Image 1 (tube, rainbow, N blue to C red):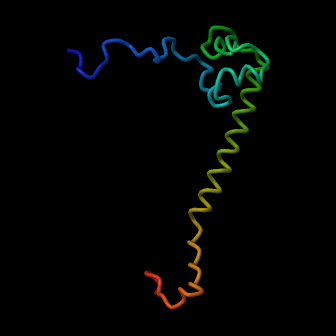
Image 2: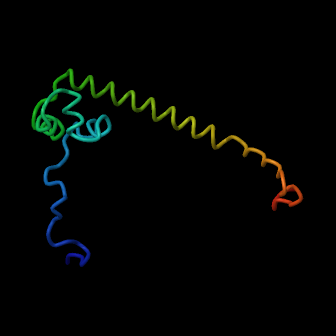
Image 3: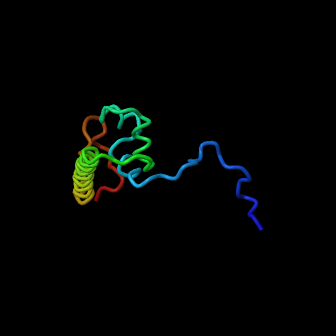
Length: 110
């Protein structure tokens, strides 16, 4: 018996064609088909065909995708390392109060 929460009809925004072999590489390297098409100098439809494995991916395009993905991976690793170092640093000491606030004690100061 089907669940009541399952839709009876599919969403019009749901992908009708399954992603192809190279869809993930294109998504990581470029956000959209248009961006990939501009970069590679081809039509958006050609990028769509490559992404959905409807046409053979040329070796030059595959090498370009591999280079872009590798660059993005390197950037992601560097950003992760910077964040890890930031989180490992001890918190900076609080500045002393000055001016008319000098006489007040900050809560948490020992």
